[in-house]
Image (cartoon, rainbow, N blue to C red; front, side, top):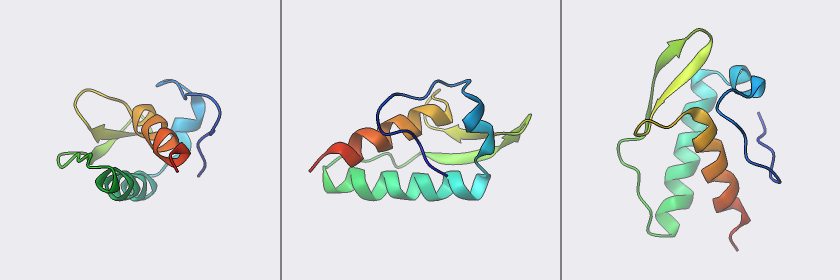
Length: 78
């Protein structure tokens, strides 16, 4: 379970299909933790099941790739 730190991940990147719902929930928890430290809160971001092998994330209309890209950005902050 690792997102590239150097380049954004696209919503149809094949690597997205390798994340289980449990892993995506852990990524969401990390997003909440890192975001809270910066005053950024996503209270409604949760998983919403799996369709065609892809975990759905209720995060507005954003795909799991957006979650991974946000985490990459937050990890780059000191």
